[in-house]
Image (tube, rainbow, N blue to C red; front, side):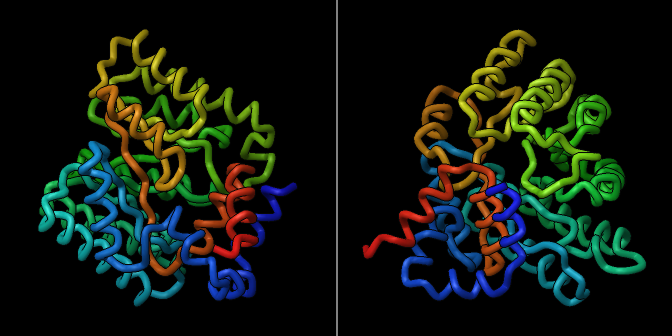
Length: 309
């Protein structure tokens, strides 16, 4: 119930304005989002790379219904990729792109617009010496996103995919994408999905995650294990060992601001750990989904709001 409530509130403009005007909002948001500007993102990425971590930057924004807004999102990615290259942070820093932010949801020819815009970003990434991962959103966009991925990979074979274990279809999608050279990030999922397409029980989502992870680890692609759950991280390590994968044959991914000590521990042990780092003015929806994912996040947020410091 709490998760569904928070996901519903993620679209509340009234609550967004209230949070944005609270005196503590900057310190609360800063735990999960390093800033709104390109310079903020590049500076935070540089700090992580110095610690031996990799980074995936996400310029926040989704559900774009205006062509100019989609073009602005593309320009933001081109700008940050150039800045990452100039700072010498590539290939340790890549970008993650939500296709709905670059035109997928536009009426009529949204898929074509999103594909064209994704190509522009992929080319900018190639010029900068790095790659792009296509984020996955709610289930209504899954087929479109996978189609666009398939159109991009012939020219940009390192383009990453994201699959979500709470969707009942995902084990089959993992089988389709577990081929040589295929980068696949497996996460649990953060949208409010109906029972007809998604597992509703947390245990079922976890079991699906393990089934999907087995497929990816047994395949010939490059699994990207996106989880903060200690049990799933341990299972991933065991599956990697069972399938003869060295530390460089897969990677762990975690969100900026969540379990930083564990991120560092895994990196110090020789693993690739990529920190998913969002930035930009559209931080509110992202923050609310992070709160929905983990009760501990809600407790942190409430403590921050009640604090006078």
